[in-house]
Length: 322
Image (tube, rainbow, N blue to C red; front, side):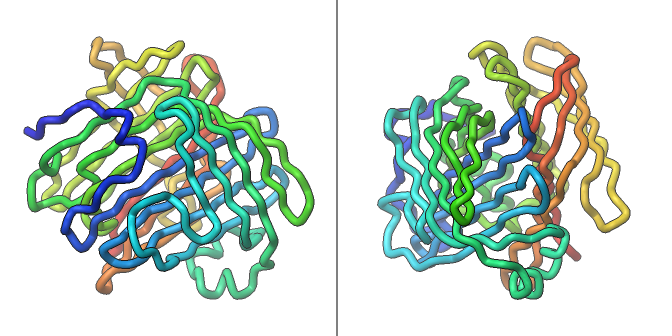
């Protein structure tokens, strides 16, 4: 079993890449307004040994459709999270960060059109967007740094160092001069180490926030051999309780293999048993290709119900296409 060290303040910044060709270091932020349900996520994944980054911007509009941007810009090193006009800055480790993006995004009325991204983006309207967020940590850090792969040595290659945190983000998104105020709850993560999106057999990653005082993350991760890990953390009033068992039941829609309704059950380290329900409001199907292997990553903007409260977040389902 892998051993972990706690995350330290210097881990908030980028690390010296190891020699693996698929070394990846990424930061990710999601953020959702609750008053008028909307929001999205941004991600920068540096792959310095491959000479490029992965930059993603996705925003679920309050009225209709989504804004989407993805690019693999060239990078020469791993010194910062800054590529394709997107930038993440650490102001105070684990407490305050800043997110900015100034560039183009494609407006898609029908997000499912991204099943065929080349066709969808060629037909979509390109718009100028500007995103500025001030990010505050709301929970203690969940995660750690392992000296070895946590799920079976050579069998898996997926983020040996990883941590997550519930957050509040304030700022604005400007779309062609129209300003959308953001006062949002969400989750961020930071990971580094070898990563192929094709490494897992599948995973389910559910993030949800019900208020500044209540948030939850649940995940199930399966290796190609079928070995699974179940984990997560429940945050109440600034205190984390670890999750040790998770099960997820999913109802899929008629449009394809896309999650529509979710029921998750979980058990905490204190032997508390809970359940949570989710309904996907908008589904965006994304894909990653490597050496003829296609990985499907379905990003569901999801409304959750837990302990009589309503929250919002992401249900991210990764599966390998056969």
